[in-house]
Image (cartoon, rainbow, N blue to C red; front, side):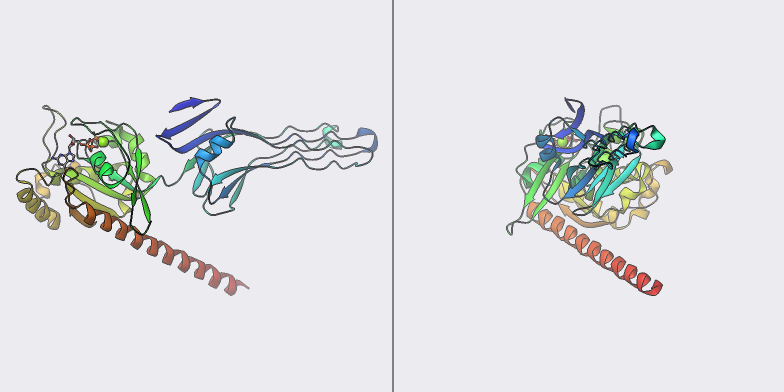
Length: 369
Ligand SMILES: Nc1nc2c(ncn2[C@@H]2O[C@H](COP(=O)(O)OP(=O)(O)OP(=O)(O)O)[C@@H](O)[C@H]2O)c(=O)[nH]1
Ligand SMILES: [Mg+2]
């Protein structure tokens, strides 16, 4: 995080997913005691969604991050009822959730021109306030992008998530032969020949106990919540954090990752998931892959090998399983097309669900009238 003025911006390279802003409604105008005149109400502060806006543009356009609405006009002889102060509008991208200082949700902006009132203007002075105006409401708000990427990479450390991101996009994440190389999310875009783009978030490696905040823990899992699909990346030769922790096979890492997601939030398991089996260039990889496929096809036959506490309630159903090598490029084109296919399917399901809901609303309202 970088501190900048009075607000915090969480920044991934050039990308911002969260901002904190100060907002204040305008004060009311003075009343006119002698003639019983009423001051104008202060302006309100609104957050308004715009299609082409980004949080980065918001930051650049309003570096002071303060949004104060106009003061209501004083009551005068020529205008006994003072006019209302000017409203202030904060332009934000579509797909934002707004919370207050205490983390309470104020609302969500899900489509173009959605708007939410975040700070109300104060009332103008009138008889019962002794003609003195009230101040506007002050509110510090947090704006969070609901979705940071289409696809989030999930895997144990060292599985090759960053290597994969650098293979499929122009992103240049740090890659190294030790655990926890990636400490904060990095975004990249897969570009397709028909100009379609899919964003991918490379995330810090996950270890057993992440749901209890071990390793990068919650911070990492929170980012996963904000991706549309999950791409599990596992090392075909398995994983061992250190000489004092147990060695895990590729199948075990998948079971353990699933368990961690479930323990953190069951909803994470409802996201469509794909599996990339990485490092297929290593010796014996094919034999291990055959074994892994057997285990994934008949997990029940192998679950007795696990302690009960390690087993997830539900196994993840992968839409596609793709063997790859982030180093040689094997399987990468197939992976890219599977990712796209899976997202396209999700889009059409979301669209269908949206249309069904619209239809239902229509039926309910016509039945009511
Ligand atoms: N042989 C082989 N090595 C690979 C492959 N992909 C990645 N590696 C190596 O595995 C190591 C870890 O790669 P990273 O891409 O940093 O792994 P990561 O999953 O991002 O790791 P964390 O950021 O620590 O979670 C590096 O030494 C890579 O060169 C692969 O397909 N084959
Ligand atoms: Mg990494």
